[in-house]
Length: 395
Image 1 (spheres, rainbow, N blue to C red):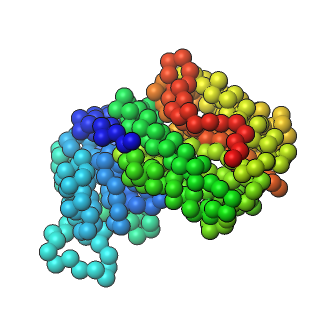
Image 2: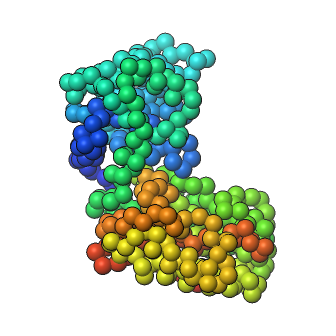
């Protein structure tokens, strides 16, 4: 049964976020930060969700945060009303450079990007001399060029880590939202298990999972739901197809619902019937590795040490070549976001981080699998955010 007491991030917390960013800007000698966002899968909405609780659709948006005063949200013409209704930044300007060149909007007031930036800077009482850009890796060339022209007399610096760094430690309100996202994820993966039978298609199982998650309040998925079977399990980013599930073949499930802008991620392999000896052993190794990483999680522990606890288990079993990416990452307004801990990241874990332990074994002759779950870092260790069964799972 769906609870109607849905947790949300309160309005006051967004004001605190703007102030924290402005404090960080002061230390970095920045007069403004321009955070780009769009509706591209996985990472596109991140900055807009964190700073404005706005989910871009069809058109890009930018959140302009001046050194003092309130932010300004820049949108295209088809986004204006949606932003006014749903964004926590209520001051919205429709920017000429965000329009489609073949589309006309005769009843929309358009402003130039340079003028919008000037308006935002007036709130701080100083013209922008040094401006930070966040979201550069997402930005199309047309947008980058438009910003370059609007900031032609300004020093521009890349500030992705400045903005994402604010997201690493989760507030109590964020933790409540993420906890519920994991309830949604657990309902989804349970629905997927319940829908698995010999002859069902991968997409049938995905549909069952997504229906359950939508029913629980999910607004969408942070990554496309993965239901892959047999040889389809081999790629890291498997795609759900129309292939029918078969007895004794490996089935990979990975789901990542998005709720109120925040994510959860659970991954499990399962077999209808009996797994081969190779698959059974890989499952056992991955589960042991995930447990080793969880035991190593505590505030102050270097991230590389935590991830290394899992990696060492896999390497000792002779499967190290299949551990293909960093196995510990943060979960927030992007399903896979900084901090990301692999062998080279020695930064310490901190209390109130939400981290995913994702043990991957891919590109193997028998296919691929992952065990993935989320954990809240507490003062003494790690608290699992779901309790879906693990181990060698068979149906």
